[in-house]
Length: 242
Image (cartoon, rainbow, N blue to C red; front, side):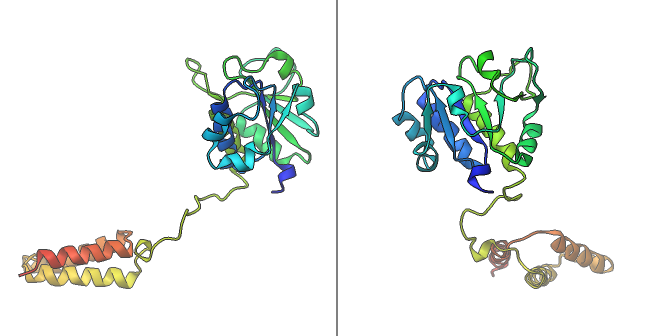
């Protein structure tokens, strides 16, 4: 998806650089790269944010923009979501993260997700500037989420339909990690059959055929890698070494 269609993440009056950095990492996990900061308490740039952001510093923090007010930070935004457990007295639709981000994916313009200060969250004046409220359905006895957790949750819900459905491999797998094919499994079964026959395992003779059948079925059920097969061949050779 084009970057100009991805949601903007707006952090209103964030207090700690470490939390800004952790939020940047959470953003980049799900392909979100545009962060806007409203009046950060400790100024900007913040070396603690860079240290916490790790690999996200270059792609997210270096491009982050600072604004004096939330109204200014919403430049170019067509639809904004305020993340809060409060503000229900305001006449606004209230969504779960999943519903809100599904809507954001379909929205033809630019969306923004607004997060408040770590200790107090968004004030009603902030929430009033949003089109809708997003509230996470959490344990009512412990509803607190830290800033990075909240950003991560919203990023996940947005990215779940546009990112790969299965985890991408971080590096090329070795040949030993490939699944063994049926011929390799058959040869392993033959090896066990031969050694177990020599050891007198298939006894009495009247049950030998059904025992072999059950073992062959067992091998077929196992999902073994080529490395697994080699290990089992080696174990068997060592156990039967004279």
